[in-house]
Length: 458
Image 1 (cartoon, rainbow, N blue to C red):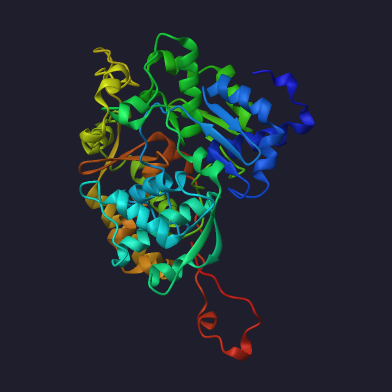
Image 2: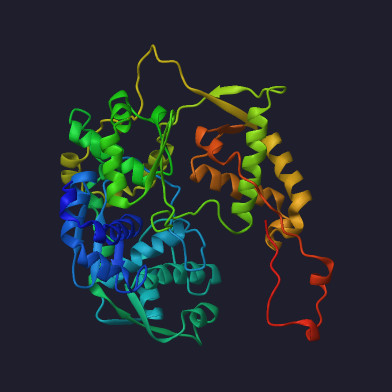
């Protein structure tokens, strides 16, 4: 990476562009905001060269779009697509999104929502187990979520009408969209045609452990794609690379993030908030309860009078998700003659050593009963400050909080509890202040209001 090309006064601008591109992969005139694309276009040449050299990524920049084509070393279900209302996509929404892209690729410059729904319904009827019935509210809601995802990224622009009105009553409501074809074509361009694959493994990076340059790119990719990179999940060669100041420094220089090093691994700290998809600590009940639970977990782990058990737990990815996806591939749609040339039966690359002499790493273990009891106690103590939807749903709150901590790689769920990962200790000294409304704040008359609103939270 040729650092001398970028003037020190312009370095912050370059790093902001790199963070935006790494965080979003697609940048348009409206997504993620209106200033992102001009910023990317300013640094297009430098970004194209540096992202290819450091991470093996390909960047394509046009007048209306910037598209980053990453290399995936593993499957990750911790970053699902979300609707404009922050609803996590399920299989139906993903299917509608894919079929809508197929329909838009054959459409003109404009299309109505009902017409697009007809195309998607026709495609869906040819797939076993999938359909789209505009008579079912759940199907309409899922379809509108998929269309909203496309609209947020600029593939569709509402020209007239209202998608919400159509979702409520397709007989009375309608919406007309302008289609931005360059964005549509930039959204989905897999490295290999899906009809040529017997396994999702064909979309992952090839196993090139013999090439040191590819190993270095794999480690750099891990640094920008995972909240924490643990040495235990890397091979010996990759662990040695992670320990090199030069390699980590290259990623710091490109992104403007600061590396935090510990004996167990490395995490890039994003104080800007432009690379992380989840900010933590953060606002909202889930983030706040997660921080409270972290404090309880840290106290339990550090309690020398009541030591908790240790359990071995490999941090290398299991391939359950890959197997589930492979089982869902419609074999009738695979073009076998070409699939045989591309796909192989070789196993996915493993990120850990297979040395028989290496002892498995153990982590503190807390069982499900302890977790449930602790969250219940936190709810009893602070529940009045929680969002209303969680005050009466401790089970759902526990599930969502554990999912957040898992995504942040602070814990790892196992069959009957959780393993406490080293990065959780980073927050063990956090001080949580609970603001409780005073009684007089809860009963305010109209004459007493001054335009301000009270806010309770952790």
